[in-house]
Length: 414
Image (cartoon, rainbow, N blue to C red; front, side):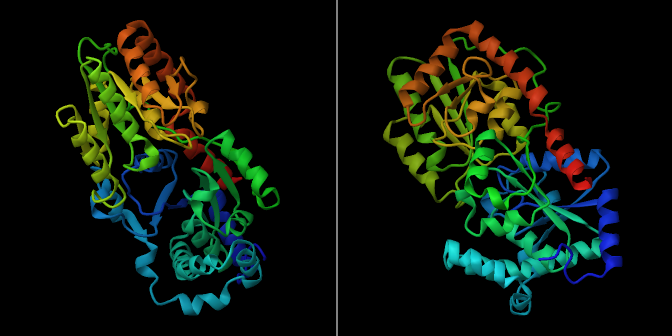
């Protein structure tokens, strides 16, 4: 496939000139703004501070129950939802796709690839048209799922170049990956572990890859007063999507064990399930009632960033017991706020938390170890203060939100 199909030389030069100038950047996030998307909003602000105008695209709006941020309405007003502008156009676009390449993906990965192609074809044309109308020469896609396929189709149809960010295991993002990666200008990958997996999985189809973890706004996420260790009651806070792999059930069990041993522990969990409250939340509700913890464990639902920060600053311990976690922005938020943090030694978390330095690590699916770690922080004020200070310093140095924006802009202009 040629780099600029269906364009004459003058159009190619025009696209490239706009890319070098960096006037605008297409910014594509699936189901934006979702409950975990504060990172993207911060990165958008960082891009704007660099003089780049992000033009927001998404596949579709999130379910109503997951729209929780105080900036959600502003974000949706700025976002073009490609699924809404594309209906009925797939039949016209399908014959123009690179079927030689795509059929190789089908033979390799199965017929399910055809469903993704059919869903993404018209959206790819819509993205190409919107970018042409607004002078956008590059689109960054914060996904390797269908959104990445949309961007790849847009490029094939004569649209802008694109780049990807890999946020988790490739198996989470569906099939047809080689086509998506082969035509990207570059990709950012959030952990060394994921980088190694990509290089082992499909080394012949990779664009230049840059290791760039996600980041947080360290100016906003900070304490105005020193951390004060627990005295009496131990306040534990957790935040994350309500899903079995986040391990909230293990944290609830750890609280049950601590209370049974006579320790005054309370837990608040912020986050919602993907069904807006009718999914895994019901499982957790039943578990809380089963252990008679209604007065001690609260499910807060999806709350905005200001509420998350307020609860972090009130907490003695932050804990997220994920069974697997690519990296975890919420860990960064807690550590940035100087809250002694407990994570699991799973996925890329050990790249962020060195046990005993930025926080404590426990095995996944181990409520007893979680309970012991909570008690260790509560009963050792010196340890708690040290974790608060050393963790904050690490986040300031290596995980500022602006770092990701700088990588995208620098590679876009390269």
